[in-house]
Amino acid sequence: MLFLDELPEFSRHVLEVLRQPLETGEIHLARASHERRYPANFQLVAAMNPCPCGHLGDPRTRCQCSQSQIQRYQARLSGPLLDRIDLQVEVPALPPEQLTAQTQGESSAAVRERVLAARERQYQRGALNSHLSGKALEAACALDAEERAWLADVLEKLKLSARAYHRVLRVALTLADLEGAPKPTQPHFIEAIGYRQLDRLLKGQ
View 1 (cartoon, rainbow, N blue to C red):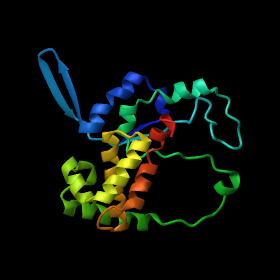
View 2 (cartoon, helix red, strand yellow):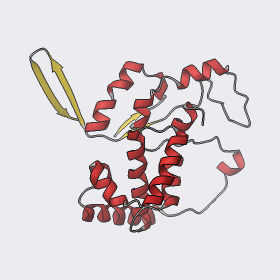
View 3 (cartoon, one colour):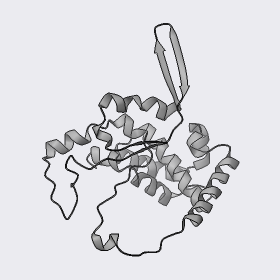
View 4 (cartoon, rainbow, N blue to C red):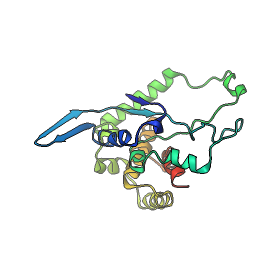
């Protein structure tokens, strides 16, 4: 696992170099007459503020950044890099009363059982969803004509790329696996698309 905190603070060149290993699980180096490939199968986890001061959208503290500062900050992340990040989730600041509240959520043991069951479904399918080829992914999702038309319309409105489309399919299929559903349905696709928040933010959606 590779964790990058304050993601936009890394140089653009460093971030763009991540694109190849995220896509192929390998680092490919070619220098003159020499060529080497190294395994680099890792999970990327990254965090960033919504703006340079960190308070954009915070109801308790006013953001001090100008619109141009916010745009320049967010533009440090390229579209091709974001295409390769499956889950893009906003984590808003929580009010003190919610932070200190004692709530009882689902136990880690219960979540673990659901994850193990989902992985077993994927192994029975032939591979983990992240390793499925495009053809195998399409077959597992088994979209009918109506679902394809609806999904194509949504992707066009959100201006998502072909690579983002396949990321949506993988996430939707995983959501279905976690529920034990035979195939992803429209609610799974809606949730999967909802996890592409930075795509929509940077494209003005």
